[in-house]
Image 1 (cartoon, helix red, strand yellow):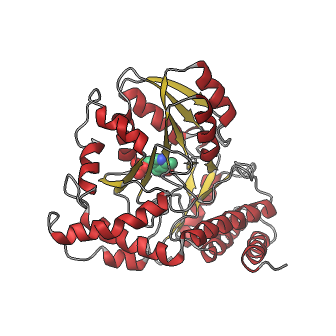
Image 2 (cartoon, rainbow, N blue to C red; image 1 turned 180 degrees about the vertical axis):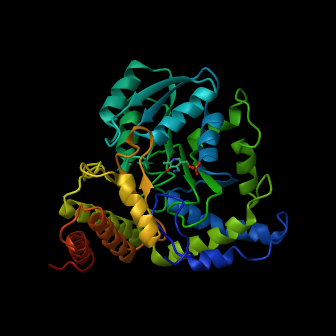
Image 3 (cartoon, rainbow, N blue to C red; image 1 turned 135 degrees about the vertical axis):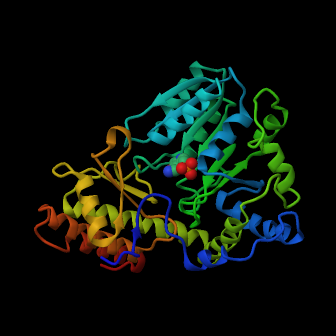
Length: 388
Ligand code: PMP
C-alpha cells in the first residue's frame, strides 16, 4: 500500500483541512506585538458562538485534560464536596483529577454505553446539599454517548446551586452547545476534535456566576492553570504566557471555515454522518454500543458479537490505511469506534463503510457487499434531499 496515505477516522485527533495546515506555516510573530492582539481579537467572536456564550473563552496551550484540570482547580478547593458523573473513561478522568486535588468526590456511575439520568442526579443532590460542583461529560468519547447536558442542567437548577462543569472536548463545534441558555458554568473543549486543528489547545468558557467564585478562590494551588490570569489577559486580547501561535493561526482559519459553513449546517452534517453510520451497521447486522436516543453525532461505537474488532482494525489499517479506534478499559477488544467529526463529510462516511465491508469480507464476516454502503446512501438521500 502507498505508505504516505492514511484515513484517520478515530474520535480525535482528527484530520485537518489543507487551508488550516497551510495557515499554520505562517512565520511566527511577536507574542506581545499588535499582530497577536489583532489575531486574538479576530478569533474571539467566532469562538464564543461555538460555545453559545457571550462570555470570554480562554485559550490554554495544553491538551483537553489541561482544560479539565483548570476547571477543577479554579472552581473548588481541597475538601469541597463535588459530584462527578461517570459514563465512561472521560468521566472517570474528571473524578481522578478531583481526587488528585483532595476534593471530597461523590461518584455517580453509569454502565458504559448508557447516558446519565438527570432525575437520579437531582435526587442525589437533594440528599447531598453540600455538593459545590457537578462535573459531567457531554460526548463520552469512550462509549459514543451524548449525555443530555441541557436536561441535566435544568434538573440540577431545581434543587441545587452547584456549579455545572461540562467536558465538551468531543462535542463542542460538532454538536449544539448553548452554554448561556443551558446555564452551564464551565465548558471545556480541545483543539483536536470538531475544531479541525492539531492537538495542543484547550479552551475554557466560564459563566459570570462561576467567575465570582473563581475570583475569590485562594485555597487551591495553581499557577499555569490559574484562569484569572487568562481572563484578565483575554479581555485585552492577550494571553498570560507565550501562546501556541502556529495553532492560533490554524484556529483563525478553521473558525473561518466554520463561519462559512454555518454552525447550523455543521451540526446538521454531524447528525447526518451519525445516522448514515448507524444505519449502515444496523443493515450489516452488527450491534451498536449505544441506543439511537443517546448516540453522539461525533463518534460511533460498534460492538460486534462474532469477531474480534481489533482483528478488523488491523486489516483495515494494513489494506487501506484506515485507522479506527479500539475500546478503552473493559471495552478493549470488545468495540471499535469510528470518529466522524470535524474535517469529515458524508463522502468520508461512505468511503469508511465501504472499506469496513471489505475488511469484514476479508475476515469471513460479510457475504454480500454493499449492504452497509447502501443503507448509508439511502440515509443521506433522505436527510439531505428528502427523497426516497
Ligand atoms: N474528554 C473527552 C470527552 C475526550 O474525548 C478527550 C480526548 N479523547 C479528553 C477529555 C482528553 O483530552 P486530551 O487527550 O486532549 O487531554
